[in-house]
Image (cartoon, rainbow over all chains, first blue to last red; front, side, top):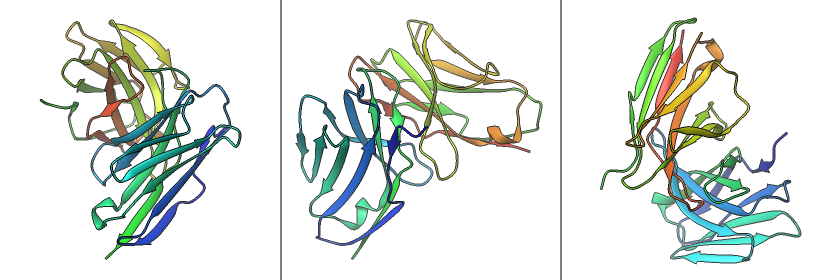
Length: 112
Length: 111
């Protein structure tokens, strides 16, 4: 039972353009949503989070949008840079500090 | 300020053996969670420790056990290793908020 899904295994974007990574979830009890970036041979690095009471959160080049009615969230990276090339995971939690349920990841490739 | 550190980074074990993985949380963090990441998959929650007690547990058999020490560091123990236990094991620490910070992981190979 995959509660968090990232349906695109890979995404390729030109440097300077916008990258949009998508994530869907099924559990309406999720209250917190997070995005992580992972390079090979490293652990996931926290990028940005959003709580269910908001529909948008921004941090520099990264913006997360949450559509609760559609049970969908997305991560926008503008402008995309080659150093952004990595695997991106979305994760969800029912409570602060509780277990995280991860999607399968989307591999982003930003080409110069 | 050291982040989350895990040891060892790589490990090879034989089927049936037992293994212990170690984790030191980020300074000031009191909650430690363990995740298993198989190739091509997202991390899967194993369990979480807070105040030296297991607070939450994922869908993993009893062969997976853990411990948290008074200094908040933690161990993950896996008994009777199976080939399917080969994975990247990640430790994450947190403090009250939803954000968890991960270590670099321990790559376990069971042969």
